[in-house]
Amino acid sequence: MIDPLTTWQQVCAALASPDHVPPGQAPEDFEAAFSVLEAALQEAQPGARGTLHLYLASLHSLYGDAASADAQEAVTQAAALNPALRESALYLALSAELDARRRGPEAGYPAQQAVHGEPLSRYHTVAALALSERAQEALDLHLPVAELPPHLRWRLRSWQADAEELLGNSEAALNLYAEAAHLARGSYRAGMLQEQAALHLQLGQPAEAQTVLERARSEYPASGAAQDGSGDVLGLASWHYLMSQAQLNQDQVEAALQSIEEADRLEREASDPSYGVALVWGQVLVAQGRQEEALAHFDAALALSQPEDRPYALHELGVALLDLDRPLEARERLETAAAAPDYPFVPEVLADVAEAEYRLGRLPEAQSSAEAALAQGAVVPASLVLGSVAMDYYHLDEALEHYERVVREAAPGTRDWITAQQLSADIMAQQGFPDPAAAYAHAQQALEHTDPSDDWYGTLQDHLSRAEAQMGIGKGRTLN
Image (cartoon, rainbow, N blue to C red; front, top):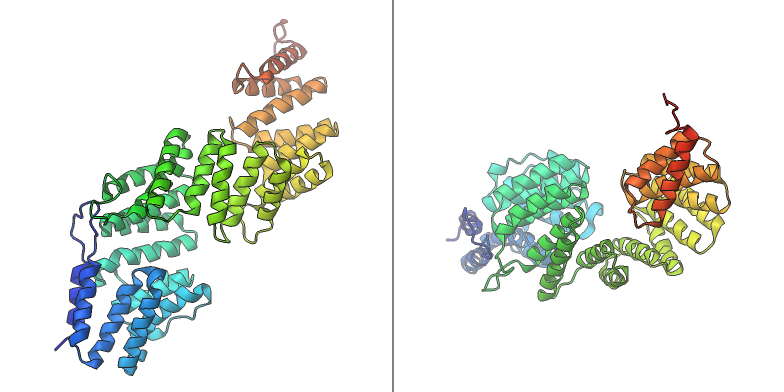
């Protein structure tokens, strides 16, 4: 006689990873686990087969959205074989998870039997709550990790990390991803480390991301795929994609290019090119000053994008076109990006639209877009455009106010900061050095970051000398 619980324990044993998984070898034996269940289903009585179908649904659910139909079919079969299971905690928990996969935040709240059921039911309830964006409820559900079989322990921590991310608790999410990586093995461990690295990148911590990624690399075969084809090619592609971003954000541009090219090669090997890889490849080329080549990659990203990704690709494309001095084409892409609902960088897009309008000679429109961008928080790019418009109207005091705002707000040494220092010094020179000490400071700061081959270098030296003369430096006067 087949006992469903004993069968489930055999399934869990098949899915328990050894302490060390050779790179390229599957960390969990799903083939053996499915074989155990299929053999039991053939021999079990109808009542027991219903429970076995719920375990089968649990197994399918681990494949995520890709196997939702199989999981739903198993749940339906369970209820047909044993209608009493409709009131069981596991049936209700699995049904809630499948509902959340279909409807997201619109899904119903899991039944109380599921919330208070045995550990397996509570695991699927946590998944349902996380998928329906009930993050705090997912975290509040009591489920000690030791109560779960090993193959679910790291997955539980991953769901909880997702919930912490959704709540904006980045440090807690990083710690949970780290614990998930510790509990997982092989490519799953690499995946959790890569989630941790991705969060470091979102937090502007590329060096930390690179350190975590270096730990993840040893979980993959050196060649990127095992000889038997079991290597996680797309997982390694994702690794190179993340590494490229970490390198790019540390100005390791050549290394970033090599990494993103390898990510693209691996994705194409798997016949699964992605929006993200195309977008980052374009960003790397822009960093190398190869905007013309970058356009093709941004166009590819646009073609591969989902609706929520489109404004990101359009924004990058618009900025690249601006860099190529093609403002009319740039404005079209940028305005489309600015109109996208929920795009988080609308202020920056409006500043870029203002720059396009300015280059088209549409000064009132440029000023209007820049003022909107400034009001929404894009202080540096908006102020640069407003300064340019004021200069064209020869409103020098107003232009100086905008450029000095850039000096205060931009990071020292950046291109925008240097530009603002140069223009501030130049305006003060045109005004006849009403504040020679301030003009001297702007010119001196700009000179420290201006290449001697730059046309600005001689101009700034002249401004510095004239400001010195105004202050009496070198003529015996002592400044307090």
